[in-house]
Amino acid sequence: MASLSIEHLSTTFDHGRVKAVDDVSLDVPDGEFLVLLGASGSGKSTLMRTIAGLEQPSGGTIHIDGRLANEDPPRRRNIAMVFQSYALYPHKTVAKNIAFPLEAIRLPTNQIHEKVMWAAQLFGIDRLLHRRPRELSGGERQRVALARALVRTPSLFLMDEPLSNLDAKLRYSARRELKRLHQQIGITTLYVTHDQVEAMGLGQRVAVMNHGKIEQLGTPHEIYHEPANTFVAQFMGSPPMNLIPDGDWLLGFHAEDAWLPEGDMPAQHYSLPLEIQQIDYLGADALIYGVLAANRSDVILKLPERRAHGMAVGQSRNFCVPDALMRRFDSRTGLRART
Ligand SMILES: Nc1ncnc2c1ncn2[C@@H]1O[C@H](COP(=O)(O)OP(=O)(O)O)[C@@H](O)[C@H]1O
Ligand SMILES: [Mg+2]
Image (cartoon, rainbow, N blue to C red; front, side, top):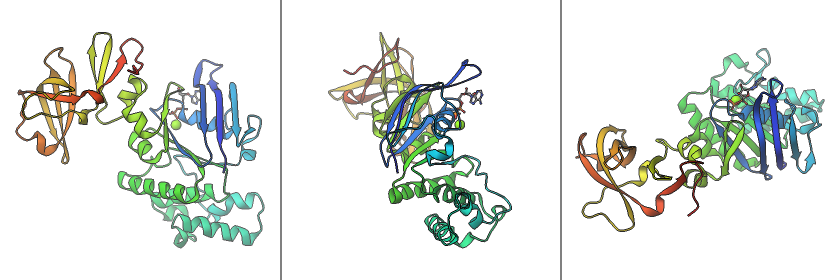
């Protein structure tokens, strides 16, 4: 296991015209599970590939366990990487696929056998060792790829959207497995996804990326409740944070933080007189779409579904949000005001 420290790292393409990674600094302590979250094209894969030594940075440093790794070839970095496409060898059995990285370093046969069994048991695929990849389901193939990546006990584990090829239900159970795996072996992990639910569920910390830069790095709680700027506020949450223009500021609040008082407006609450335009019933919750009477800005609220009964399109209702949950952003810079 190892720590990872990146300072002012940049990676460019097209003779410097594309800044895929733009002056990124990041410290990942030993044993952490850190998620890089961003839309397609934000530079996540390039950052991973630069750390792995598959891309040459145009500037900055990469330290793995305190040692400068910039000049190390990928093999010497002792990094395991799993991609969206698992790239298993189709003609080799599962056992041979998992054993491949160990055979490449000429480990004695009995040790290879031991390690293959360890990795296969870890992922619950020890009954499939004699099969070939085409005889496996998508989820099983994904586990073989993970087992193969981990069998060399790397210092760092990099995963680039490893679950994107799985259907929603399998993704859910694979996520639970990855989390359990990390709790069990505690290997320092960098995990890339564009899926915010996956990021929040897996990451001890999450780095939100945009245009090659990190917009915010924090725990899932910090990223969600204390967004550093309007980009992060609008990227996280479903629906994303409401932003209401108010002079030089944007006032932000989460859809689920609004409620409907029975009588008078309570103290220390922000008042939201809303004209209801649409209601979506989603089982547990209902989404209320509306416009604010004062400035006609669009707002989406999320209520427990039972509380939305009796509301109808065309009605006006006075919702409110606790002052303590309102966030304020500079409308010019998008930066969060700290007061
Ligand atoms: N080999 C390459 N040559 C030129 N441009 C590239 C190359 N790889 C990535 N890019 C560009 O760098 C940016 C970041 O890409 P990438 O790291 O793949 O993003 P992500 O993984 O977040 O989707 C994109 O604009 C992409 O088009
Ligand atoms: Mg990518």
